[in-house]
Length: 195
Image (cartoon, rainbow, N blue to C red; front, side, top):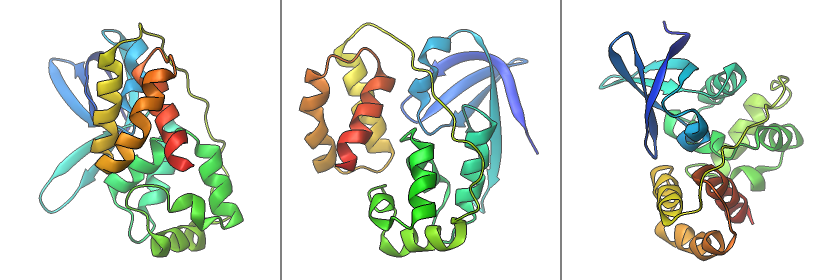
């Protein structure tokens, strides 16, 4: 129904963006909203997908068309809903995800929140060899180092389904890493959580 929304990026929250277009503020759930930090209060074009459920109509926003395509592909797997798909996409290592699926690496896949052994095996069965589009590169925005970035990153991890124990495990390394944006902290946290 909707292909994209173009307008001013007016708000970034741990789980969603708000884009103002023609006097309407659209709330778009995203895999990692802090990737957009460098574009706050600027005009953006965001590919979207409307997911209709029995009790809700939700707009999901993506960095580019390839990420949207990967989201829709993940939704075809039994056991993966929109929230799980966003958690998987939040890692930003889409080429690693595709490689893990194609090589049958279920251990890699079970490290995502909400993906158990059965779902990982279903992903491999359903998607192996079917993910032939190129993974995209992400640009990261720079911002001053602050406690706020750390808090935003930890809140985003909680919203993506990581447990308090997992979040606590990465908090200190993130504080000591000298990272300069919430996006960088999230990317580093995902890598630490994969170990």
